[in-house]
Length: 612
Image (tube, rainbow, N blue to C red; front, side):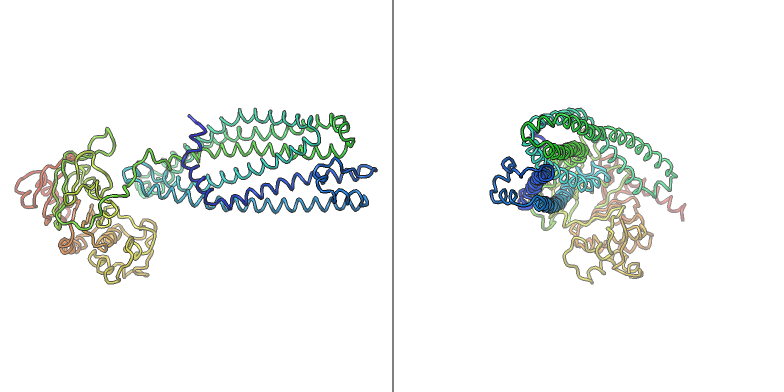
């Protein structure tokens, strides 16, 4: 249920108020320009009244009832003594001067509001990005990629619209007050008619606003759904082409676009009701007021034409500002869907975050132990791993094998700390990973996965990412160990070659070799290879296998593999089956047992003979 207190305490508004506090000087200038703009506009009507009085009466100018003019006796005296034509020209010049002040104030107002919006946009977008990166991997993985991208991108439009419309609201508020002062001064009774007009507009707004807000929420949700679908289709272009799913992908997107179109059409119908009513009522009101104004104004001031003209002009401006209030509330209601989404991603109470404290990890001395570890991706899900007890000694090679879905990659992710065990514990030299500073732990881990991710940057930047200073010889040595140096130097730009988004300019095998070189360059204490050689030919695989034999003297290696030939020399081979350890031992020991591993080895040997 919506409450005002809940609104003010929302994460987005907290950031807005914090930014307002930090930029109070900018907002003070903005407020001052608002006041100057309103004062100049109100004073202009006083000048108009004087000018019309000068040309509509043969009598001497009476300044006794002209409000602020009475506060400046010298100006009142000068106006009374000047010839009528010169006094009229003076009024015109004064009106132009006041409008110039108003225009300058309006410009400064818009600039300061734009500056604040730019700073607020940077603050909120940066905060969203930081929030996403500070979430645990398990928490962040619950969101779709397109959804997270949309969160960051929508902040720009949402913040810009919100600040812009709130600024316009403040300007309108001050100008409306200025017009009200003019209207009340000329005739309180005619002002009462204006209040009736405002009341009608409020009733119309009260009817429309809830419907518009509901429509805005639906439009935003469907817009995000379309964005997610398009993002997934673009990311999966290879799959769509390979499986001839292009027409199906278009059909799904078009269905969502049709639904979005229907919502936007309904939103448009609702949105445009208020402006129509707003534009019609002032015309009716002015016609009625003009009919009764002669008696009302002449009885109080004796001057019908100046009062009528000034009042009608002020009322026209007043009604325009009322219409803008209606438009502002409509736009803010339409923007509320975006703001609600920003609040969703900025909330902290429904998310898990990476711990900022813990014991610093420096060196792996003894090894990593799994103590009765059970893990499920979500509560009430079937466990992916059950009661895992495993010892990985320091500076040894441990290999994980098993059917797809047996939990091999999940176990590797638990070592990295991407997920926390549902039950049980993982110990590093006797310390629980839950007590470690994960940042310091991960700095000593190198990871190479089957789907090796590369940034849209040069090969050099991709290899050295996260490292402050890298010696050129160390970089080329790591690339050589990963059997990547030869193909890198064959490229036109060598190590300065930009690989494209996700490394699309390179083959799968080249990407894997770069990922391995990147991991080796970090000189990790723990190296995790998750199907790291799946895209390599036999010769490249042999080179890397030899390099790993040298590396294992300095680091602990965990290998996830389907091709058993790559892990036959491992110190320990662990066979997983349905999330449990079925057997473990060396290659020779497992072959002697004639269990699952021996069966896998026999099958792969037969397949190899058939292929060759």
